[in-house]
Image 1: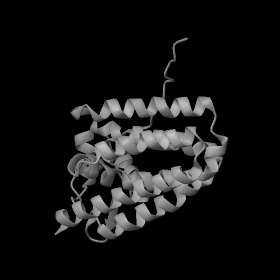
Image 2 (image 1 turned 45 degrees about the horizontal axis):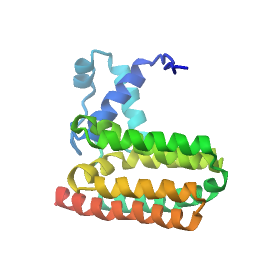
Image 3 (image 1 turned 60 degrees about the horizontal axis):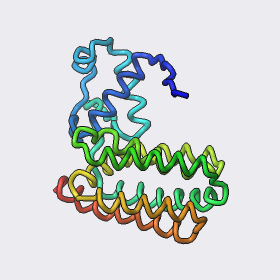
Image 4 (image 1 turned 120 degrees about the vertical axis):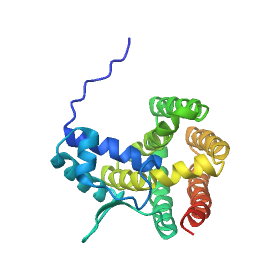
Length: 223
């Protein structure tokens, strides 16, 4: 039976959010770059209202900063932010995974394998960079959902949004793809075998290793 994709109707604000988020995460809009509402509205062929609303949403996501007499700018990259975000991820995601593994069934594991296959295929395509973080998040989320902690998942989603551009930096510039791919395969194996301690240890190392590589990159870029 073929699967059909439901039609999703998006508001102008949602469209502007997605466009600006992608430009910031990809580096097309550089950290610290001013985000002038009139110029963005003209470029995106919308009024200033959805642009203003989009910038406020991106501020809540940590990607945009409003300053008095300066307006909105893309948030600067920060070594301290990397440390805080990734240490939080290591704490929260390992706890979720430990709670989830006993509840993982064959269907959930098959779905995680599917996302992992898509991610590894995307790693081989230079024009698929924008899908890396999305597929990475889907893979991890698929494993965590079985913990049945919806509020914690909301926190993880927020952390992932703020970590997105840092993760892209690591994968693009620090040669992180081979290790990430192997870690994901091993993690799924441990989950399949119900090896909670090994899975949790690997996930913590996976997140903190990425943080170390990213801190070095960010330090180079802001120095």
